[in-house]
Image (tube, rainbow, N blue to C red; front, side):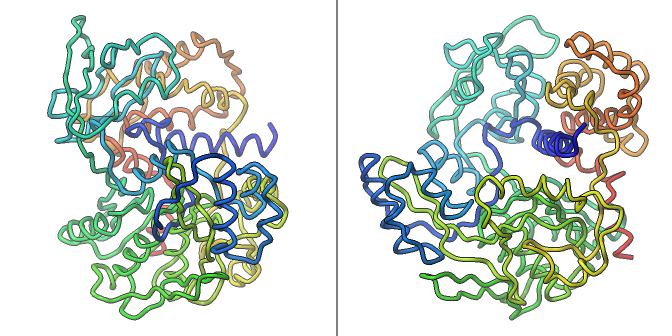
Length: 524
């Protein structure tokens, strides 16, 4: 199996397991953004006018000198790709989705779901949300949305889940089948504003060391962090492991707000500067909840933007130890310019610089395609999987081409990743097995009590192999043996996710996570 193919499988699993196949409330988590503010709506009414307006905006606001008039013959996407990889045009639906994601709320009913065998399976219900109050529970199957049958029809995902969301105060009619019941039940659920925390997990790993996982920097991240820290301190926390792996960024204000909780007063967090944007410094005001106490920050190649701002400030001020692998290298600041039809332009207006003056942004001089493939190149070059990176590359950060280089490197473990495992991931067989078969055999209480000792039984394993064969996958015994421990661990994690949510998933994952183990050791 080629290295880059194996790495793509790994990334697919990382996102699919962590985000559970896009189940979270019908939206995808935002990656690599960094907005500051919005300006008044522009009123371009057609494509030509919109291109003209975009060129006008570029001339007035772009981070570098650019002859924007030479771009007016290109389609919008090609035009923006000529500038940099992060300036982008968002159609109305995407612009709205992005705004909702970062704001940390949306108008819906508060469920997580998974499309299992062409049926919407409810995999979590937000406590005290509209669906919870109506009586919808884990394991329910949604057969109809209003008068439209969605079960067994192989409808596109957008047609299945898009009907659930709508204006606050309006009702959606759901025809539900409870687990082990044959009788369908109808629920009328009033849509409402649903708040979504950007903190996936916050708990004590041991009596003194806490773990906090942040998935994105949304509008309320710093407030969520403060609440989590206060709760953990009351339980005895003195040390903190802050996990920013696969966190693609979000609001700059959220990153600086969180930095204010862990850095002392009058410390420069980050500064921004561009051709049309004078240098702007962001400094701490003091009075943070965790200005004292040992700190470790976990990053990887998918930690970007706001994550890199926070990690860079911690590193430059010697506030804590950075553990993991070199971060993505997204140091361009976008500002959103909306149009009258609901679409928007996210245009790069400045660059991020760490307190020591280092630009976070990696090079994009070889073009858009090369930039998109840069993480694959790291894998092929051995940067992600080497047993030990050269010490000089860790100590001399001027050698690094963008991103935040960790103080302590932890390689990407690819043991067990092979062609057979790739099929299980791409066909979502492990997901389907857990949600279709295994989830009904266990309950949250038993899983919670047996966290440190729980293992998939031989009977479960035999049923999994039978399930794999029923899905048309030929079992290669040699590759199965090589991937068996990885497969069983994935099934366990998905089972904990199903019954105990994000918190349960990360508690199970962290029992054997090499970066977490390294962080615990480093904080001794």
